[in-house]
Amino acid sequence: MVVALIKVPVTIYFSFRGKLDEGKTGIKVELSDNSTVYDAIKQLTDLHPDLDGKILTKSNRPRRFIQIRINQQGIEHLSGLQTKLDDGDELIILPKLGGG
Image 1 (cartoon, rainbow, N blue to C red):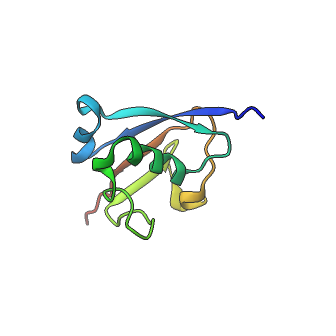
Image 2 (tube, rainbow, N blue to C red):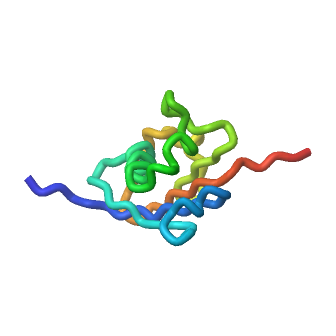
């Protein structure tokens, strides 16, 4: 059985993006077809262990100050961490902004 791979660019916009190779803001992760946002984040933290615990809590929920978006749409408006990814979807991880 041949497993189809998808490539998903991941862009990080906050202080610990420097934990990526050479301080890049983004990288591409390769995932099997039918992968989810959670799978992409898991692979990202496997590749960059310094990010472990900075994006998701121990109970695998996004940290309260983190916003996760797919193609500019917040995952809270989709299927959360179980949102399926397609080849070329852009995963964006950034701090939540507040104000009043």
